[in-house]
Image (cartoon, rainbow, N blue to C red):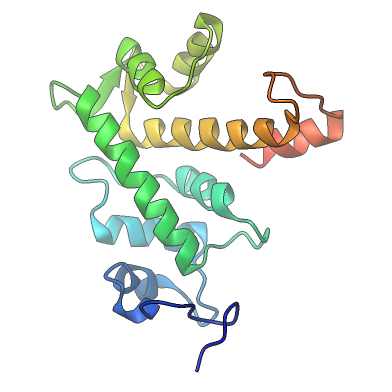
Length: 182
């Protein structure tokens, strides 16, 4: 019998969830997956579709984005959350990859970011395009990496913007921790 907070909660057992097969195929004895295990899992699942598999760096970012206990691993519930978010990002990417090339152009990246609710200055978008594009094109892996960083940085900023005015105060050490963990 499972008790709330100790193992399976109310509802279906994880083993009955269709995603559990992907997760359990790479999870170790501890029921957690690391970045390299996530990379194998996502590659085996085919979530990237016809796009290249995710790089290890992007997988590290995805684990860090959801790593609430700072274990550098991901449990099944975190994996399910990631799966949902990844599907949303893939759908956004596909909708802006109009020519089916597997890349989006820099202006399409700006439209995609805006469609996800981010309102960034032209200077911020220029920095993002410079960071993630190669010859003016952004691959799916780089798009996901960008989305992870935008989400994580926005979450961290919101926690510190206590007045919800678009302003936050950071200590230098806090700033380094936030930016280096993403």
